[in-house]
Amino acid sequence: MTESLRWTPNITAKRSRVMAAMSYLGILCFVPLLFSRDDDFVFFHARQGLVLWSWGVLAIFSLVLPGFGWFFTVSSSIITVLSLIGFLSAAFLHTWKFPLIGDLAETL
Image (cartoon, rainbow, N blue to C red; front, side, top):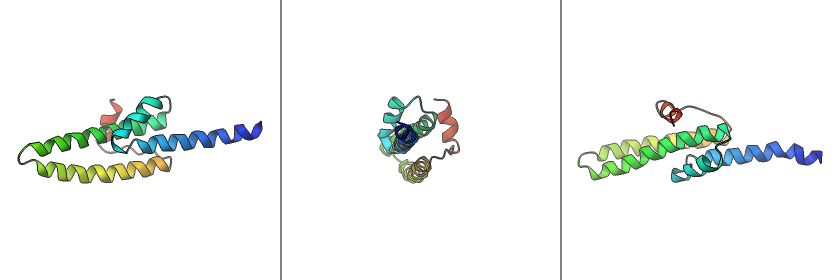
């Protein structure tokens, strides 16, 4: 009986890691938003992932406008770097509020 109680925090931590890391994988940011709202760590990462995903969608729409292709190039580079940093920080159970994006995510 005590062994199962000892393993419970590890299972919870693994689930939190996976859900938080999933937040930075594009549209999969909605999975933690819908299924882990009670976990503050996961919800923090899910909100930042949602802002990054929204920014990416906006960047894709900028390709339609003539002369705004540079916005897509710059945005996709920044989004890729921030997603990688967010993914790794979630995997290592850290929280790091991205500049500007973190402030916007807190309003969600």
